[in-house]
Length: 132
Image 1: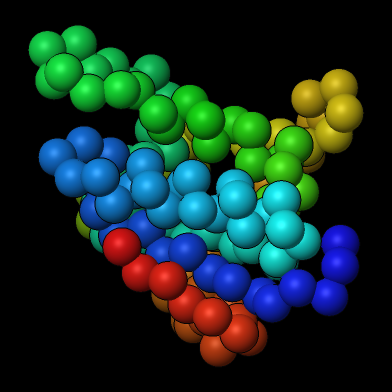
Image 2 (image 1 turned 180 degrees about the vertical axis):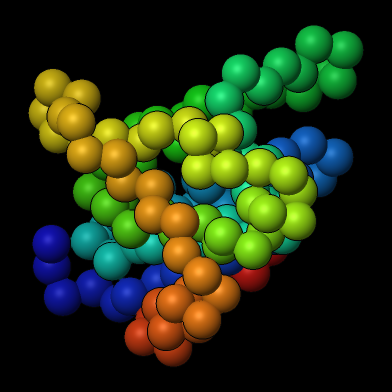
């Protein structure tokens, strides 16, 4: 990875009803192509973005959340989920999709569940923050 800026995309909203999450994903992928050091954080209702098996039938919207599985292919290896946001929503780490890395799909899950305190450390280490 080059000498790009460390950019953290903070996803706070659920997957559907607005275009913020989809656009944030697209911008993150473009940033990674241009050698920026991209990280993603999922807090509040943003944790629902990583819930597998979503369907947009009847919503007249494109189902885009499966694209998160490609993050490793774009050299995005820092994906954080706030533990407290999961707990408040009755979710556990097992309820999240796996995002793996490696040329053959790999075996290392890039999703790291962290406490709000640990996430604040991540936030403070960034050059740029982008909130949805």
